Length: 112
Length: 116
Image (cartoon, rainbow over all chains, first blue to last red; front, side):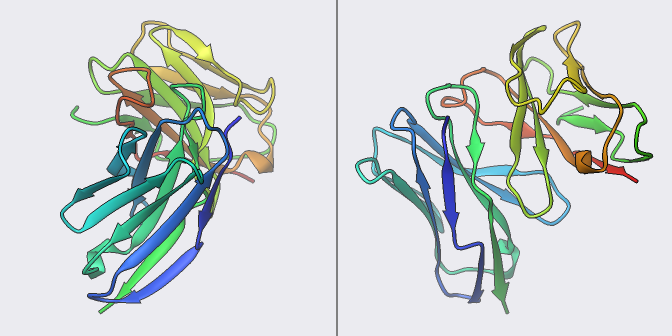
């Protein structure tokens, strides 16, 4: 099955700085890479995703990059704001097409 | 409702008791998933339904866990003879398509189970 490793486990930045979270995956069949944001006590919510036919995708302050050769993908948040503080999870489906394997999460804290 | 609804939001039970957790997915979503989230961990896959049938239950930890979705909508996760290690947040998610590589998973708020 798929194995997803996520780093770092915690990340603290000053407001306005950039934050980068990295994930690696094991199953070369994975072709879809979503990122979910989970605020304390809330449900995980999709913030951005990327498919294997592109190397980068951007949505306002959030971007995701994918390197299929190296089997890693990263989340980039620019101009961080306190409301970006949350736990972020990466995920990959492996070859299942329906079953996402999630990373262990990164607790991002944006200090005002 | 507009989102995935889960009940109860919190459940405290004693070791050995039976527990049922309910999930009401978004109307029209044929795919339904149960995940388990332990403290400090990412969601862990338990079971996937496409319509009424369990298409993949490979994530259920043992035979004390069982889930049903008799009419292709509401699903119930059943845990028999609960153990302290079952304590976690049980998340339900639904999606329009069962293909994880084509669609967003919409999660519920979760049911927090505490086994004393």
